[in-house]
Image (cartoon, rainbow, N blue to C red; front, side, top):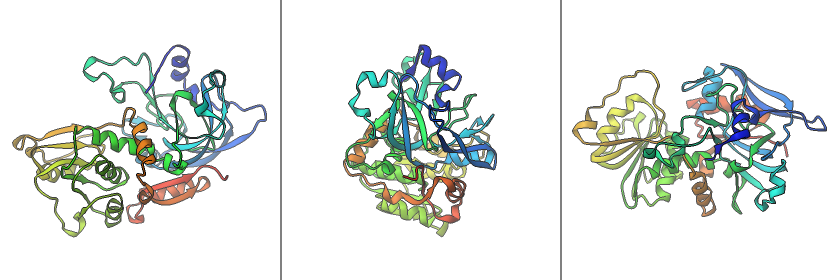
Length: 376
């Protein structure tokens, strides 16, 4: 992640990175905008113009995340609440359409017109300095503007639109052979790779992933990519477990059918975010083993059985977003990591609300739902 300084800091503070000033031709575009709880619209807006240090992207694909669903359903995601309309989407990819002042002059050959790219959705606001104990862990910096987030007011618009201006330093060109659809999944894959990286060495170790939603299934793939031995996935959904198997799980446990979690597992990734799962997951973790919390837990009090944390001397660590693992994700895609089994549905931008409804409905059997952001 890159700290924002001087003029960039001032612009970030007032939300100018999401401005939509019309271009010379007055051309328009469509964007997926949440106006409040239950109020999602495909709005028409002016096409943005790239400012100094920015790149204009013609967006192609976007992946729907749980935070997008939360804003649409509740008007909130975690502690962030909508104060005004917000363009959703932080899992996105597209192609370079134009370069703003300063970018063209640098002659960056990676950013030629038509280049397929994805976006690192985070920008640090301020000096970017962290305490020594977390040096280099920019994901823990307290002031981060993230695509499609209402954490600050003005909010930071996301990329579910036909065009989006992006700071040049947030652009990540896609390797040869990696499509923009796969490139849009580099962001959630980076989340999974960061989680797997919280354990120094997985080679040959037995791994349990509890919760086989999109992130859990990506953790399965990331663990296999990093050399894990046996990977076991557990969930309440048979459809989710089928995706996990396709992503590399050698064993699955269908908890809705009475299966139980394995015992004495070296490394466990808890990806469901359900407090009720913590007791069984801690019991499944080997004595002296490691539990990585990937799923977001509630911000409010919730009952959970935690006794085994002490008596089994379990190391329980959190995992939050990622730092620069998007680069690792793109390398993994280039090396042949196939995320296609994760994608269960595709919708055009005009059917965005239907897409979110499918992604939010457990009965739909969806995993990753993709939005085609362009008619091209």
